[in-house]
Amino acid sequence: MNSRILPLLALVLSIVTFFGYVNPIYTGDIAEKRSAIESNNNALSAANDFRQHASQLASEEAQINQNSRSRLNILLPDSVNNVRAILDLEALAVRSGISISAINVSKQDDESQNPNDGIDTIGPVGSVGLTLSASGTYESLKTFLRGIESSQRLLDVTQLGISGSETGVYTYQLNARLYWLR
Image (cartoon, rainbow, N blue to C red; front, side):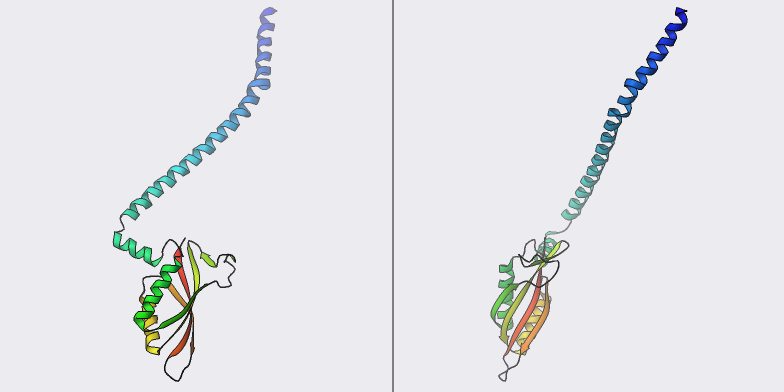
């Protein structure tokens, strides 16, 4: 009889041990840890992919020659740099024969704009509005606009107003957008 009860008792004890202790730990704590390990492995894989992509972009950037890089920095500088843009516009106006009376940095009413800073943002590119008041002949205005068109700095003329004169010297009101890389 002892020979039959002892194995039966061992079987019942092992079943109770399995369902009372081993199974809850295996399905609870260990399952949570496996899930955390899987999540960490996915994050590590994504980080490795990002690191490879970043190194690929860095090597592609290193292949850009210095002349092209400096031209790109002029086209889309990494800051607004209003002072430099105004100095460039004034130098262009002097070469064109236009007399600038005022340059104002302004903001346009746009929903994507932060009303506190006057700067619009479109993806990675920001822009700021400029209002320019000047006077000069029509030929000097054409020369000035050709200079803006061929300028290395990205600048859009959005509006141009001309006030007439009998002397041949006109007054101009020019609105433009100046772009920069955020």
